[in-house]
Length: 188
Image (cartoon, rainbow, N blue to C red; front, side, top):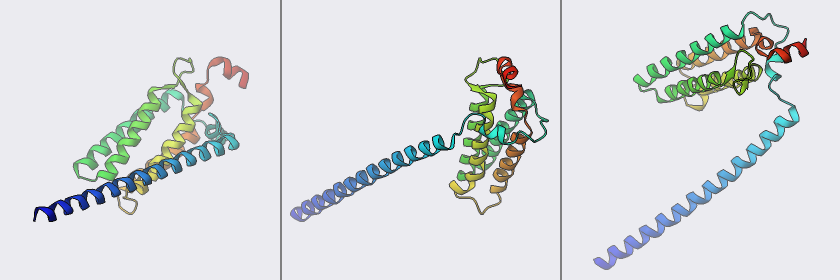
């Protein structure tokens, strides 16, 4: 009996070692693929000539009803919206929706904290770059239900609605008002 147990243990160890080697191999291939995809995305963005003003300037003909100060208040409201939404989903054990909400809250809060709304140059993200990052956040909100597995559920409407609202805010914000005074004069 001990001989049989030893051989079963040895076989189990071999199977586990083989499985670990396969998992490592798969992980290496995935990491290589992700690195290659990252290089391709960066290369495509460079060819597209996407810059800090790409998204805000796409809406330059829309009426500009939102000032940088109002935009900062709207950012705080969106952060609060996603925090409350995340808490609400978490309390109902809807992990995917809670995760998507907290990711969006974190994105908006972080970008807002680093944005130079006044154009003083004291913060690293220019107001126009903030507009482009808002488009990325809107995309993240819209894709959240798909990526976190609740696209076909009612919870998704909270994310799709906010993404649509974000596009409207991007279109109606006066991105040039948040430029430093020296750049604003040159642009005029």
